[in-house]
Length: 235
Ligand SMILES: [Zn+2]
Image (tube, rainbow, N blue to C red; front, side, top):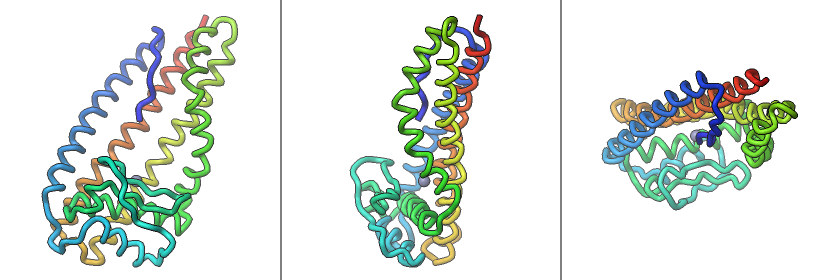
């Protein structure tokens, strides 16, 4: 998710950086879409569906209190740590493609992280309430802070600190995402759900999914720099 940006002039070099990251983000999204279309058409030789693979991976990791459910939409797949559900989008839940199996195993990777108290996931979960609070206010505080920059610069600084929490969150998300994909790839291959050739497809699809998180984190950092540059160029 890219933060809606307020352009007030000033901070122009980091604004330029943001435009470049925006273009890269668009390219990565397109690549991800075409990769998922491609691997969505390749049927798994063993024929398991996303739902079946998710059930097997949870059971195999000794996880009995997490449900696998179908959720509407496209690319809406996620693990819900409070409800303890692996939510698979309808196409992933029912499909036996390489892409579907990759996504299903990745989401179960998050359930395994939760069960094993993976530290980066714990840290990320602890930050969720902070980020929810921050994202509901941060845009307004930043706007007010820029408008009042001459009289009350502390307000913009406060907005920047709030925004920095969301930037930190987007970077903590990276090890969580890469680790979930690593767990998925390892398990799928070790258990013979995929063969070596299919495993390369799984890795390729998950690589592009992870890159969207990298772009989001970089975009958040560039946005933070942009506001810092405005703050530093006051008076
Ligand atoms: Zn994930």
